[in-house]
Image 1 (spheres, one colour):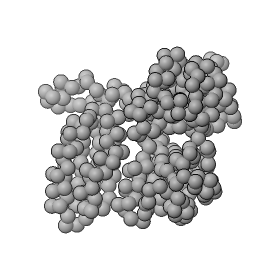
Image 2: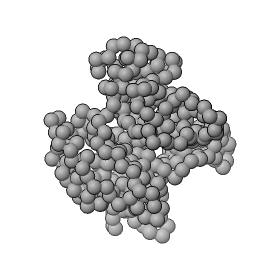
Image 3: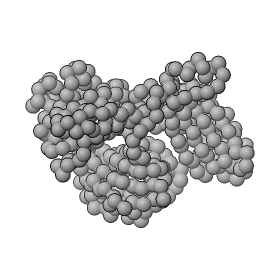
Image 4: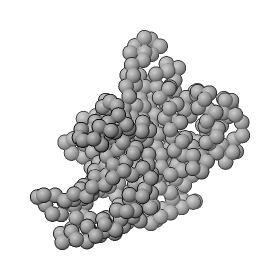
Length: 384
């Protein structure tokens, strides 16, 4: 993912800085998976990797893999993989096919940590020179030390009211994870029987997620909603927990901030877009482009927007100045004519009973009303 800064001016002539983070810039991606395996399972682990390596190599977008073992500690391993860009990797790592492929490794692994990077520069021989100008991130990231992520899962139809009550009333966990990591904000929403929990973390996302999962107040809530989940889980069982978090992952594929300061009237809303089968990634890219175009527009009330995507699911989190109904085109990221024309081919508005053109404000207001998710809680951690 790459960040592109710009310096527009607002209606008062004050300089602002737009910063956007995106997975759609085409940069090559390097993924580093650090593994700690159980004592005595080295041969089994290597055999399992040999079994799965050809399946991984056949995944669209995959370039190469390296398996490495620590010089100092035989139980510490590293898998470094390279991908053509972020979207094919994210599609693979969050898929059921991925879970099935890595299953033979699970009983060997004690702990894992995944780190994902885009490639900026490459130094080496002929191959490196040949690709030096291809698919490399052109500039380093700028911006704050904040990571955005979401988890999503479904509950049994008919239990939505009870689940909403449970999730609305939980006590906030301790925000401080360690000296470098802090939980900044947690926003929970409900759309039909789907729950979406979006988090903002300063520092290490995985450390923050593990920290939150261990907190007593959070565990109590998770235990309370377990009977209502459509897919069973046991967070006390490491393998079951790993499966849940993989299936629930809803990655942030694009984020943009306008650079204009938040006023007292800024509110956060979440939108769940009705997508035609197979069109979700294209829609996510479109929303990202629309948000980029609006970031420096003084007429836009959107102060920040994050697009989350996996499979056929597209969710967008929007921080908007004033009431969202006052500017539905900007809030929906459907304000540019070219983008609207493309969105009409990607959105399944008819599934919501909406049949008017997206250039009509009444149609946009109806679409906004149907896509808005029910807010359950939105909590910022106190500044320390």
